[in-house]
Length: 288
Image (cartoon, rainbow, N blue to C red; front, side, top):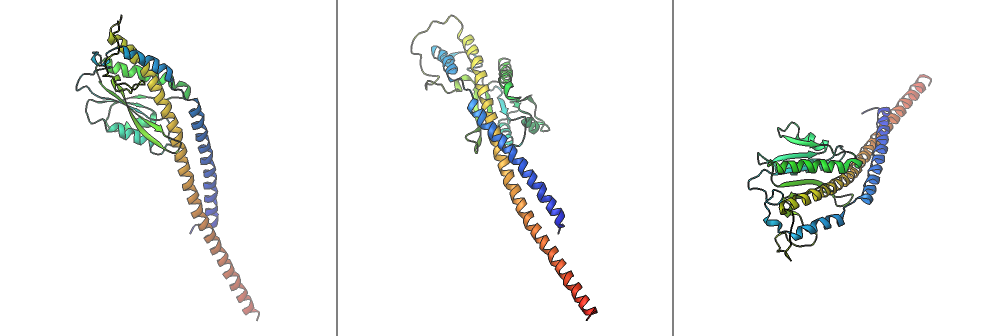
């Protein structure tokens, strides 16, 4: 059994480690609630832009944002984090993304350095983006939007699916999937279907395909920005959960070390008592 001093030093290490984990957990909780209060969804802007779609027979427009050609490769966008301590959340996102990579022509885009680590060494080509700091999030969303549009317009991909983490609460995180393109996959705010007939005749000065391209260009940036906000919130939630689990494990380790420490102390005391009684007995025998 290790000496009392070694066990005592181990307990001190795990106690300090436990304090550090609790500090990190407190920071993650604070970041979660701070972002939750500041999150922006721009509902009014999205509803205003989507209202223009009601003036067109979108389903009949010949444009890759609406009707991609058959047998076009699928574009998969996986949103992960730049940092770890998230338990298995990034792994779950990438596992879901890999599930759509069975088609040899499908294209993978990975946002976040942690997700890119999963892909490296798997002989899978991908385009990588960093998630960036909070103040850079909208710029990252614009960069990602421009990349996706370039891939679709150039004909390298057809439909596009985004896979990202979402926090239902600070304790529960799940992986969500969204059909980013074609735009007819989007749920409409007015509750109607894209195939519903127009309510009135509208005279359009511009080509419907040009209008759709511009409207999708505007909305895609906002949708990606919202997704990246949700992903960031899920990152803080997952980190809190992971640190809470780590804190519990450290407590269990300390309990085991405490039992080992008391047992080692008792053994030392018992040995000292035996040696003391043996010395007394020997002394009494020699001077009896």
